[in-house]
Length: 274
Image (cartoon, rainbow, N blue to C red; front, side):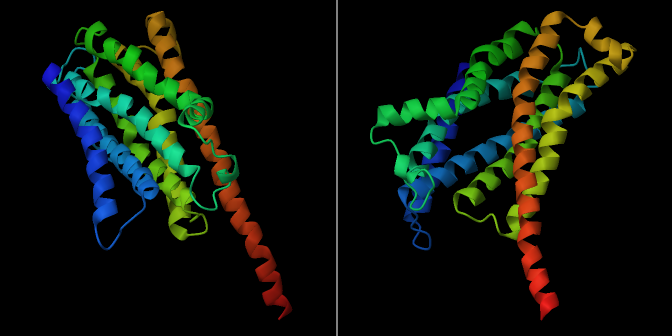
């Protein structure tokens, strides 16, 4: 178990450093330190998401009895992925640190001059995401590995597949960072992000209740009254930030598509006048 934990502690930071070094040293690229850090962090997050989703699919598809069946990959991948959340707090801070210094960025004039000031600003701005990562390590990890006592691997596998939405989120952040909001790629990725986030992170929790209700022959609306209170509490606490982030994605999508349609109207009027 400690070997797997150590492997994850080496893999994710090592992949980040390797990616950053390649982006900076490959002659055809020669990216700056800040660009390499930002893209490398998104790349590692996307790779972790693909690994987690793949593990989740393998686990969920192998469990015929969704409550009692076990799969060795469940606890193994949890142990492997825990260091990722610790690393990602650092990676997000480095992205924040360099993002403030990207030439022409809207926050460049307010960029903190000292690391301690930047750290305080980062924690204030990214509080919910940092809190999410801390809870994953300090609460979800021990609950998933020790408290479950080997039950519910199917549900754990389905939860892993929530990461399917992460690659499109990461690509969207990169495109926005480098002011590519006007491109077709950004619009297509925005639509994909909206759909995958809604299915994988919002509908996920009602589906878990539906799956258990079908397994236990309980009506869907009665499932919350039939499971232990701490299961309902855990689901509510995990779902709350997903709803908040989904609302932000919806607002961004609304600005993206209504903004583009408005910008096209003057062009259409000019064409009619001509």
